[in-house]
Length: 442
Image (cartoon, rainbow, N blue to C red; front, side):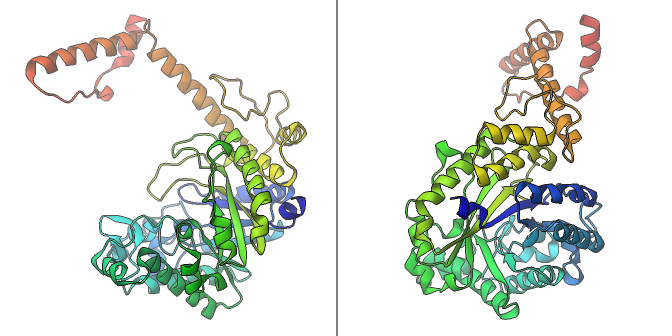
């Protein structure tokens, strides 16, 4: 396993949806990633990329971008910083699902599979493929030195629902699988014809239920390398039992994808490190049992999702996940043990306080003066969670005036409800100057 993990790619996924990092942060981050064992970046720009011309509205040059994206100069600086640190860059551009950042705009609204949902594009719309081509052309042109391109194609939640797609499914030889494969193959053919030097990656989930004979009928294995993603811990880890055999009979090269953050809850504040360590340990076991079924395992992507989709709330901010990422990278290369934990903790500045990997009852002691970029943000989140726990404990205490006030209000409203018919129980705390009540009753 040492030869497998150390001899293959180790990509750190940078998900820029909703929380793009400052360029100055990358100056400190990238050398650390390389030192911890990363070999490259899986860079998901989404709407932070400086698209131009017909696509200007969807990126950082658009009228609604404010300051959340990168200028062309900043984006080039990021790529330069990655190169200076010895990190290869693989850009990820969505081409089927997770297209909210494009389809939310009025100009592209007609390409939605379902008019009320901007997540999935209609593959039967004659404007769909031209849009994908424009996205790819701008991304590839901006990254002249890349060897790989990731086309996404995961979680196409709304597929085959419009009249045209429904007809194709009902009349096609392979139903919904055929509809998916026809669109993906059109994208793959375009890339291979336009950029024959590029190797292509896609997420695997939409292929998990497709029979190998169907995939081989489309010759998809000649064009793309699937990236198998699974973020569960050991207890609930479960890829389809025949997945490796099927993919081994179709694809020459296969990737994997773990998670160091953004996989345990859409509103998570800090990573549950034990979950992510368990995910990596289980992945190592999975590979040891199945790697002989494929021709070549190309590498792993350590994913770190910022939000579950374009409209979702933010989960863990990147600086809060640095300890998790460092431990996961080291675990992938050397396995997790006490020595690994102690060394990573020391490198990150956990001297007076331990680096906790399991959730603890709050409030907890919080370290200061750590030694990794953005540690102040991580410490700030820890303080917030401590104060949140104290606040909830305070207001829920039977002896606290706010608890007594709410209890009396609930009882009063319920009595009103029982005597005046159905009524929606609403508490608009903004209308109640309860701060004065607290100070008066304390």
